[in-house]
Image 1 (tube, rainbow, N blue to C red):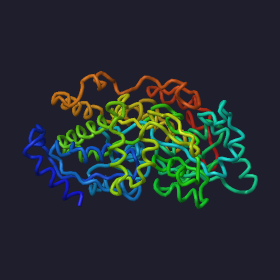
Image 2 (tube, rainbow, N blue to C red; image 1 turned 120 degrees about the horizontal axis):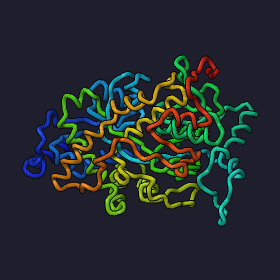
Image 3 (cartoon, rainbow, N blue to C red; image 1 turned 135 degrees about the horizontal axis):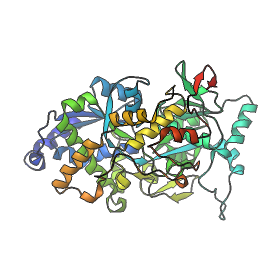
Image 4 (tube, rainbow, N blue to C red; image 1 turned 180 degrees about the horizontal axis):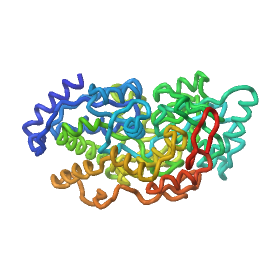
Length: 455
């Protein structure tokens, strides 16, 4: 039905805006995949607001069962592109898991995730958390408050299990970062053991995002890291409490990307530009006028064909605040950022951070020089495509020139220590120095052999 609707809309548009598109498209009928999370919003908005139509693109959006199925679809060509975990194009390109050269011309958002624990675990954590004058817990909450709970469970012979959405997901790395910053070891990977649980205090495993609340409620896991609306869903269902958002963990951290195969871009350069233009416009719409369009965006996302959660659940994070315990709503206006702060620009430094986390936990088993991180980042993240699309929008009067980082070398200024929960600055230009600064995790020439770290 969605393809039929897209074709009908695009046919009528041929006599209007789409006819003005100057790009000669190599392919105009496209299928894009996504997972049911609020940060797929740029795709839904580009479709619903007619931005794909304006570029002469007939687009179908298809929800995918999980991240592996989605990646396989892009690699096989059954999907032309997809809403992806930022780690997926990088991992595929370096051959961790499925090997394929995937690139991104567009970063979809900043922030947007949270870490939730069960009610039982929350009650055990609360005595370890400082309180504000009004009696509410002081945020951000450190994983050091969880450490005695994990010790208690272990003493009772119960492994402390938590969920994340995929081995190369932001959620895996953010959960690991939070745990390690609080003194809890989340475990290593090795070429022989890809569970990621070697030497772990807390055992992390994969659960698809929409299944997180049910898995928590069943007691299979005691907490999880996931994107919205699945943290707020736990609050609404009364089964769990979010303890920290990733905005509090690392302010304005990168999240999803739009991924395509390098082959697709090589064969369809103008189509890639057209898609990127539409997505930039969607991101602009999502953030413009101080998020004035967010209620409409929430209505779109609440539809069954997109995220399919209740309007109130999605609105709880998309409209400028976040609810922790029931009734404890706090203002976090930048919980979801889609365009501000150059959110859509694919920075090399974002790619390098993901690569450092892969190295930190053993997914990259051996040391690499700083130059390697830079080369991989530049092979996957494509700001040159992004800026070409942005230039076309500016020339068409659809975007403001001042909104794009034309002179960037692809690296952000270092993220200050005050913006990260462990108080350690991140500079993407010096990945090995950054790894050395982290108290838990592989560094230098260290490797994982069996259950031991050598070197």
